[in-house]
Length: 277
Image 1 (cartoon, helix red, strand yellow):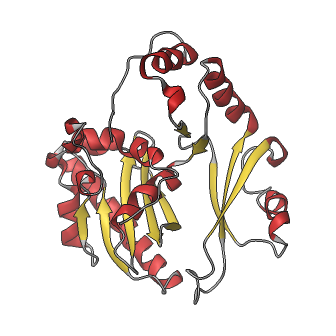
Image 2 (cartoon, rainbow, N blue to C red; image 1 turned 45 degrees about the vertical axis):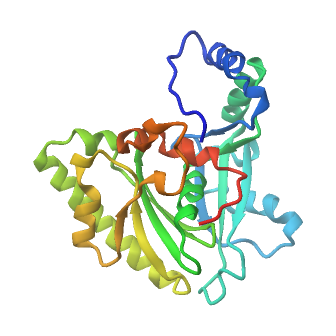
């Protein structure tokens, strides 16, 4: 990691991106952006029995009644759990990621106006997978819990692939700004959600041995990781990104609060890199 900075927006998005391109020569680097919760839909479904080359089109009709926008006006991608990883699973499944073309077109055009070449558009589930994969011990999976302004996200990763996810309707601001009584109520909700999710995952993915639950970096006073460690049956660890990323040139990223602010951005930046846990 060589640079991680926040910038004040001046003018429109295109003007801001153009200024950054000139200042940091962004054209020399791969550029990835990530959608927010609510801008796309991420579904776990059983795939239709069709040849691989027909999968996307068949999936478009499979999810037609599951999304809240017209599938014929949307871009669809399919993420498949490798069969060798899923051997022994009760049934094969895939993840379908779908977003309206209008939304994607606006995002791409804004970057094009700034003369920034966009390589990929990611989503929080796969962004979080990129980080979780850095912590995987050989032959075992990890669960990871993170929070953002839009809510919480629990992911299960094995062999560098996403195997399951669950969203929580609790935001990062709620956790950080809650008074003691409110925070205790939030913690109790989180424990209940995690217990259910862990039980479901172990039942449906019995071929995966979970090594631990990683909790995204949070300000120390929040104390979520310690509370979960006392109330869950899996080992729990506060994920210090400095363990798996080189922050020598950006020492401010050693602070948990800054890691929390940049958590999913760092995961998006990992796209395309070979992971060595």
